[in-house]
Length: 355
Image (cartoon, rainbow, N blue to C red):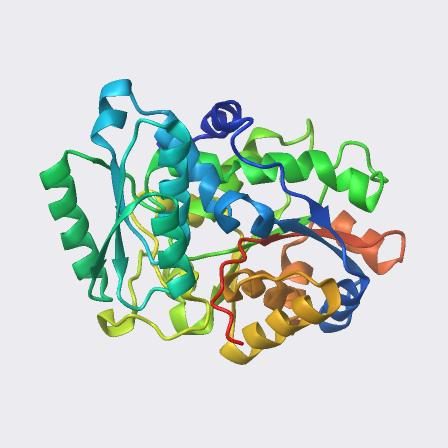
């Protein structure tokens, strides 16, 4: 039994309809060409632009689903969480959107200042703590005990997982309009979905969404996680088959600050069973992808969002495609009958900008 199932994602879409934006899907021929050269396969990337979501990231989907699912009594007591930024902003905005729900947010001292300022701007009470997972959890527990607020975990809460998956439901509906109709009518709208991995809430929700709409007689697309090599707990978990934490228990150093968190007991079983591969990328690859998206696609993403693009520009991704794609799909692509259709989640755009 999983913490979130496909029907939960479908329900979440109705709960947040009208609250969360339907974000655009965009293409960039330069990025597709770079991916094609790196993988030695003809690919077309469809970028799901969650940087245009309310609060600046996909996190508003899960936060609003969780907040809107509270009883009136629970809402009056408020919500609390610990977050380095994107979930913090999202929960604060979701609570304000409900109108009768205070928000208490524990943020580590090294959180990007733009995220802290935005969280306070949405009306939340921010409590700053030391930049360790233990300190975050202890502070949030204390806040919940003092205020009676409902704790909403950034990635483990089933309502959050379900809400995040709604972006995949949108992508499924949008991608034919962007990439054109499919040659195989019973096929899924895309061949591969690439999703950044931190705590695993996003990729778990995406996995459940893909399972909800598998064509009759077909199969879901490949689901590939994108993870910084400096914070590769999910990759090591997949390889070992056992949930792993950070190496030596230390918080990793990566430019992709939103992906420093680890999988947990609710997200790990879904990642274990439904994510096909996790590809890791170096800090230099992330920085290069970030610059490419800025320069070629003109999209102001944050470094965590660049991880997915970095994966598509990696030869390692090409090896995954050749090993994992259905033989008939790979054959048609190699014959030149069509290009691979690859969805890439650009998870957010909340960065500190230095003049």
